[in-house]
Image (cartoon, rainbow over all chains, first blue to last red; front, side, top):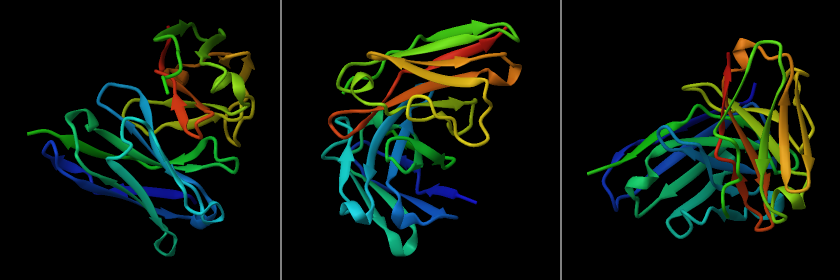
Length: 121
Length: 110
């Protein structure tokens, strides 16, 4: 059974940093692209970014809203995906979901339950 | 990359059919057969309903179908049921090698 479990959320002040983790199990993690998607309270889904797999050199892409502030990394030996968030703004407050990509790398076939990040003073 | 455009809300009675549109540009929806749809119930994680415009994952009811014409993709739900009441989001691959969501549509089953 595919499982994705996010952790690391919490309250942080504006300008601060936070690192989210996503522990994956039940599938060959190294074969898949992995993404982060967020949802601000009462708002819609927003794609944050992705890590491609080893076959694609672990390259990353980011949404314009987080580029230069957020960094996605992965450790295939630990079946884990990470999101390092720096220079946090109040508008980064959201539930952050980890999601697995399907074979074409263009859709999300499994999602975690999310972890809440609150940026507030 | 601007968000794809979806109607804020749609409604229908049990047994009826509804269609949710998702409009983008030639740089995303119109340029690729890579549109997906997600269902989200309150407080829950999204669930994949349709991928690559028309494909249904295993376990998703055949009452859900997808299509695309030009820069607009559509999700149709036939034989509406109470449990279909949820938020629905479209997503597309883009020519920037990124992905973009629609703003979401709240489906109400009357």
